[in-house]
Amino acid sequence: QVLLVESGGGSVQAGGSLRLSCAASGWTFNSNCMAWFRQVPGKEREGVAAIYTGGGNTNHADSVKGRFTISQDNAKNTVYLQLSSLKPEDTAMYYCAAGDTQAGSWCYLDDYNYWGQGTQVTVSS
Figure 1: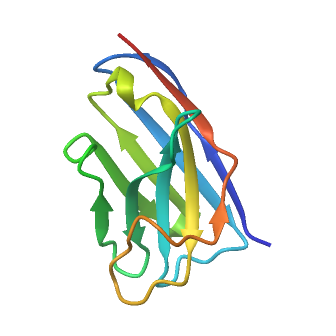
Figure 2: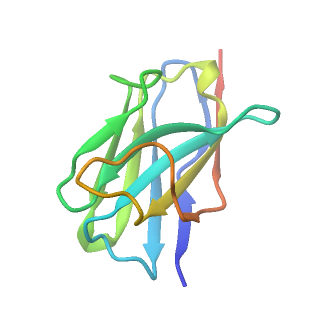
């Protein structure tokens, strides 16, 4: 059974930083994809960043490029999302996801099998 547990969310002021963590169990970082998504109530879920666990290739949404960074620690079976220069519009529930259906070494921001429960990020102006 795959279990993804997010942590690290919280409330910060605009311009601040947070680091989200996603600890995976029942899932091996072995040439598959891990990603972060976010969702605001009433809006569609948005892909934020993805990483190919086999080699570390990353894919960041245009809305977060230069501000957010996804990374992994294979020894800890954990993926991180560093959030910097936060804006009020970054306020959302952030979800970790895992997938093994994408071919190749590039992970797209869709098609994920497993999801965590989410961690809330709130940015005040």
